[in-house]
Amino acid sequence: MDQFKQAIEVLHNWKEISEEERINSCNKIIEIAQKWGLSLENIKELAICLAKSGSIWQWSEEINPIIDICSTGGAGSLTTLLCPYFISSQGIFASQVSVPGSIAGAIDTLGILPDYKFQLNQIEMESALETSGIGYTLNTSDLAPADLFLFNLRKNKNAKELPDLVIASLLSKKICSGVNNVIVDVRMGPTGNFGYTLADVERNSRKMVSAGQSLGIKCICILTNNNYSAIPHYGRLESLSVAWDLANKKPLDAWTNEHIETCIKIAAYGICAFKHIGFKEAIQFIEESIKNGSMLNKLELNLRSQGSSVESIRKLIGGYEFKKKYPIISSSNGYVKSININKIRDIFLEVYKNNYDQKRFNSPIGFSFHLREGMRVREGDVLMEVRTPPEGINNYICKINSIVNIQDEPFYACLNERICGVIKYE
Image 1 (cartoon, rainbow, N blue to C red):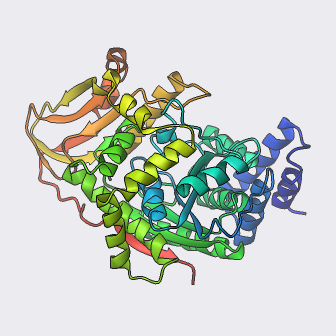
Image 2 (image 1 turned 90 degrees about the vertical axis):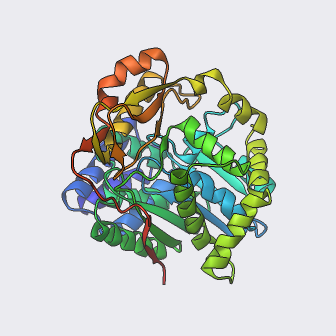
Image 3 (image 1 turned 180 degrees about the vertical axis):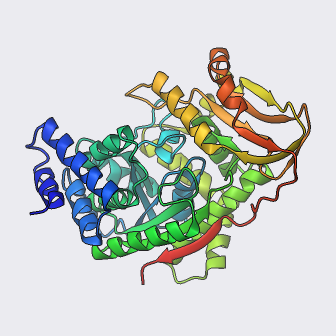
């Protein structure tokens, strides 16, 4: 028996084995993935093993069709937060199981609401789905606990960006949550887990689709270009505020609207998978759901079904801490060459580490950019605003000042079309 199969055989006894055995077996799988990669059969075996470390949920015919919208990581996107509301407004159930994100994933964002319950058991998830058509939960001790364990080991060993393990992790969460349809926002760029180049993300997306098919899971991978900053706002409060403003039909800046258009297109692929309509018609349905208040209604219902309320959002967004922002001024003339998303992520991770509360998510820092790649900068222009307590700006000012890279020569950034490919089951 080879080393991979030995490790899998040990992990199949998840509840009985010791902490040391769990660590050793997971480390062996990480080592194999790093050195040689995993075959499709290996990925399938690992996904099943991770899922079976806890309960396997099943749903009644009434909760159908059901889909999960997830991503391959990468900082700065509202896909996983907004798309479930878009899709559920068309009568499709959206169930999402995920691990904590590095900046502002959907559950991390909703989890800053003081009364939002983000760890659900099957009965609670069923109630949320029946009430609102949407349910969000983290992995729990009863829901793919081995997946979360392996994920945390990958983080500690700088092995998060191993596509084979990412695929197995994503699929394990679909298996355990009883979902056999998935839309994946595959984020091409420096902070995604499927690669920097189109060739890389296409190859790994095909592997994801093939592995999913072998497990009876229909995957649609939407390839999005995150080599440039997708949105101007980074932070959990910032993401929550954008979602709230969109649901309430408040005007948003052009940069944010461009990203929301991408989210609408991604959700439209999910609608087309279940309804016999064209892509443009699906987009129109989503846009109408925003205009007629269906999205706001879905948001309110989901908040209520998971223990929170719109009053909690109003109170949080309107709070004094959300308004304390510090401008970062350009000291030179030129053009924005790049916005370093890796540095943004590193700052968030450091801040979260210092402000960690095991019982709740928090949002001690946020960024709002005024200028994006390719734009002209003059000395004295505001590059961005940072939301943070006074001591925060002092602690991170050196790192913050180096986030925006300015060069003398004009620079063209291709920002118009974020979606650069779709790979799906046959």
